[in-house]
Length: 170
Image (cartoon, rainbow, N blue to C red):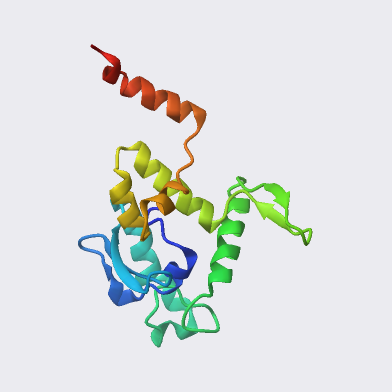
């Protein structure tokens, strides 16, 4: 959530791409074939340390894998597996729900890795980050791509108008 990464980007994070002292992660974007740097909040630091320094070592392939998230059988998780993990975590947190079904009759869930990306970008926008900065953070080539992710609620729109109501003072 904090990095607003695509699941394909998450699977490519290498241990060497993480600078824990500055809380920055170098992200390889498959879509752009380029790197960008994202920063995570201090609240993630203990969880990341627990994973890297303790829990990750329980995986047999961890010793030979350069990747932050190895699987039990290979040096890195698949993008599909990351989606499965997000779905399971949402179910365990009792926040998952089926919102529709696709043409094959398979359920479409509310909480997905893509929904987390959209949530992160919307939260950053709500905290005042410009769309140009959001574009860079998300790794989009066009601002219009970033704007597609921004889904403010009616209440958030009304709060924003109220907050910026001075624009109407004459």
